[in-house]
Length: 358
Image (cartoon, rainbow, N blue to C red):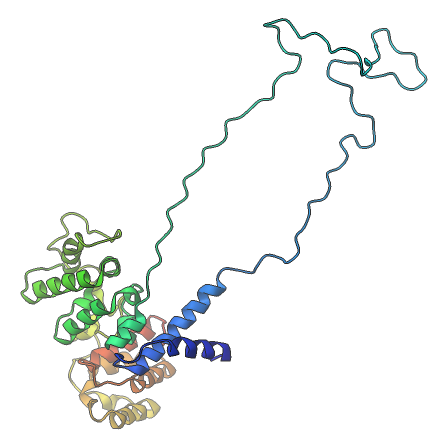
């Protein structure tokens, strides 16, 4: 890390109230991420204008060194040394009276210049409101932001209490957070915290009672009375249909450690829950064994089942080692579904995204 960045991170971290923080490490990592984003925004405004101004060059002489043309309606004077033509009359002296005005209704000798109507002024587009990044607040409340922020680009802008409500629902067995599409995520960023919690709780209750089939359509319908912006509204007739884009979680845009579609269904690559650690050989197998020792209080060989191992083997060896290293860097006590958590990291590497930018 550059010294200037490190100093700024320390300054930002010193200004935070740590009394209510539950996870100091997560709060500090979130502070690094937010500081980097602040510096990136500051640098995006471009170079300052030059210190010294400039002047446009002087316009060229109108007549390029020659005599100016005669007034309108008069013949030019004769060249030097020649007699004037019969029609030539010298200009009147300065004291001569002005010529009489033309009679009323006669055309003016000088045509008025053509005047064009000014173009209509286009209305300036309405500025896009700035959204607040709640990453630090989420981390202070105990939200697993390294998992949550992988699910959507809107996730950091969800109020901390709403994000915590989604996480508690997931930990209790409800999959709503992994099924949300971009329209639903955006809606959660546009509601006040208490309204967002109310909407999430209502959707979770309906899902638990098996009253709905499309959680995203139902969420938008409940959130309409609270929305302050223009969240995506599902098309008519979509209620009761199959799940939205979030239903493909684990493949596409919604990766993250809250699970994966292929793992949740015991998909391609083997059976979930069947240990397959013996399929990992060499450095990869040794690193997996080291993880079992490092996290012996929570990690079991059954967590490396056929689904996880088969997907891990599809990665290049250096990326597979990075996946295991990332698992080792995190505290796994709060992770309810460790195989799904590992699959979330694997899916991120399969999409070409390495570990989080913080």
